[in-house]
Length: 279
Image (cartoon, rainbow, N blue to C red; front, side, top):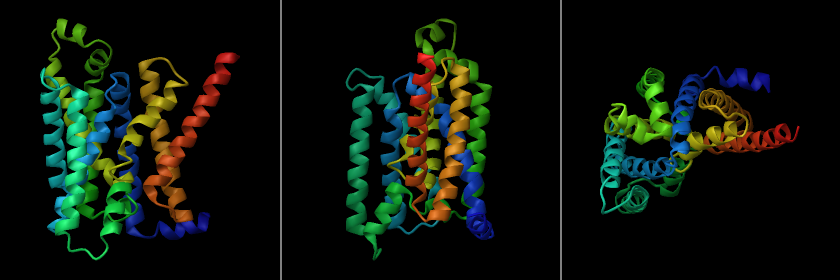
């Protein structure tokens, strides 16, 4: 197995994939804690469908570097969900569901009508499940993904205290002078960025797994917010590395393998948590 890994790491695409995968897994897990505790984790699933729609449009026009378009469309959708969700006409979960279903349906419809690809089913499968996306990154995509991931981590660290207060008591945060609207907008934009980055790793349908599973797993072991954040980040990176290495050696899809590893990690954490409570 070691010889196989050494052989594959001679190729640039594998060396590109590993650091990008680690950074994406890291920043996904950080915001995951806030989303899960605020019962807003479904937004990741909704925005991933919007990203699929943008990727479908890019595929129709055969744009090689499609990340800027996907990023712009997903950020716009995140802001729209936030704005619509604050009105009395439509609550947040209904806005997410509406945009999610519409984007997924239109994306698949446009790919069927306008796509010139001879392997439409394969293109859709790759987009939805990220079969080879992380292994086909261009150098400029690697740089952009790395810069955005590092920016997300830095922003999270700088505004950790505000996000902590906002996560547990939005009314109290507003009372002490925190600009709640601004931080909610910032969270929505950061989530959109994470979704776009995660699509390269696990595909559009599996991005929520990177956000939710590490948080749910570590919440079985720790009770404090900081411990859950740190544990979630470590577990997410570990699962991403194990999943990518396993995928390289065994030849399985990268995204599905990483999610499979995270499911196993969750089961282990549940068992360890129950044993710790009983003892």
